[in-house]
Image (cartoon, rainbow, N blue to C red; front, side, top):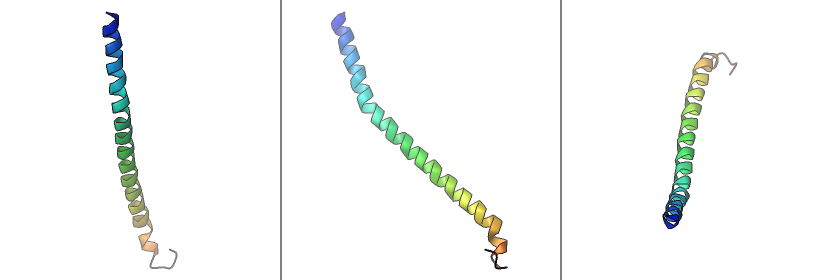
Length: 59
């Protein structure tokens, strides 16, 4: 029974060492994509708000 526990622990440890970096990379990829989309929308809204003032010399 003890050897089964040891094998099971080793299997779980190996799975975690392989999957943890993959999950971390996936999280960073998604967070970066969300940030880029947020900045694009934010910049678009900012430019839309102030585009009327470009002609009068305030921009």
